[in-house]
Image (cartoon, rainbow over all chains, first blue to last red; front, side, top):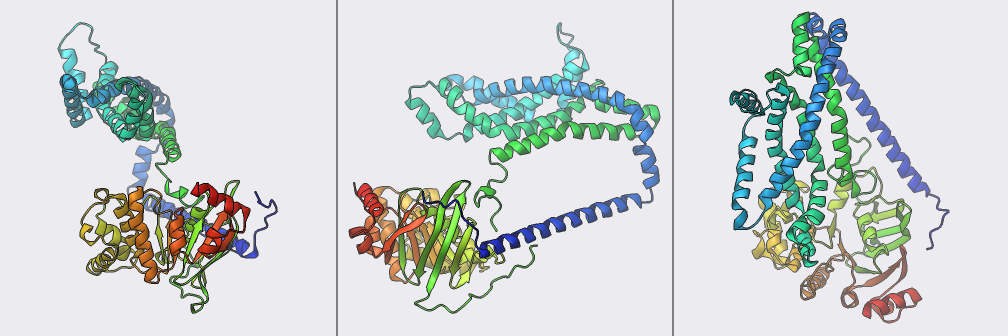
Length: 292
Length: 261
């Protein structure tokens, strides 16, 4: 290789680099100024509105925020536990549903049809309806062994609805793997199941991790819906505190906590999406940056 | 908005037949630690066909992508019609519209019909009304012999037909130069001929082309100049007779021995 270790950029190249740097600095400057201006305008519009002093007193009261914080945080801990447990069950149920829908052959028709029917029904039903029907309908059966606590019933409703969504995500992932991969696996003598397990699913799951994390973010917020069944989660706790202080600040506290909870998840989704080329695939066309 | 950017500047000086249409001087490009183009220079005169040969990784594709401004070069100059197109002040989209690029894997847009693949740039870049664009596109499709496939989708065509559509797509808008990057490498052997004879035909109309290829027969018949690329440099250049029949460099001889078997 004749690569000279002593390459010195030409004057023309240095001039080009300098111009690009200046331009990058200028666009950064424009971005900073416009962001600051936008925030300032929004802030001024808020603060100068006629009702602002009253809104400030009833939504942004620092003392109420401090006083209600422990109770709301306590509630959030329930949200986190419900979310984590249902997420595990959702992934298992959803994968089973997705696999059931990919089964071929007439013998599997009932399985396939049942899975399709399940997904159709629970994707179509609003979560809040499932929550109410499960939460108040199931205990009404007075069956032995059916949980009656709002937390368990709420978690069940989350699982029923979300597994239908996540099953579709998995199915899309399975179908995104090119048929030639199955052909290659089968040509080696792997069975249908072996090809799925060792060739298709690893690629399928990797392809759908960003949408899966997206559903997890969504789940973390929807776990707040168990409050309508009476479970004391962050939303319900905020409601109780709001009634106690006759001030809406606890809702704002709960809102901030939910955002803080989902923030790492959304960042993780972005990072993973970028790594698997969902975002920024264009930038690989021209090395470092976007094409000029 | 990016400041300090000229739009549609005129070419630097009038182009004459003996001035190079495309001039690449001292171009350097590396990907990380890997130096792909090393102080490479190349001149292409109007109406001439320059064929780039060389092993995989010798820099043929990267050179074409740098000329089409799909990659930023690390150093050097690329001039098209006397204008330094690597100047970051210029609008690269305007430059690219003056260059026709054809890719190895066709890169047709699968969701668009043949006619819409060909009219896309005419409508969006050259701002022609759809009717005019379609008339021009049909004329170009006629030239590549595919006017009757205008309403087909790319996946309904054979590989050779798809590549001819890709050539038509690059041809509309009358580019100053056509860059062709191993355009027959993805084709079945019996389809290679129809694409190569189309290129020979286009040469007859006076089109300027830079062609990276492994088809030595094509190089022998159509090229005005053959450049053998090795380790990011033009290692040997000359007429097809000189380079292919009577190579002076050992590397060139070795490469030719290997591909002719």
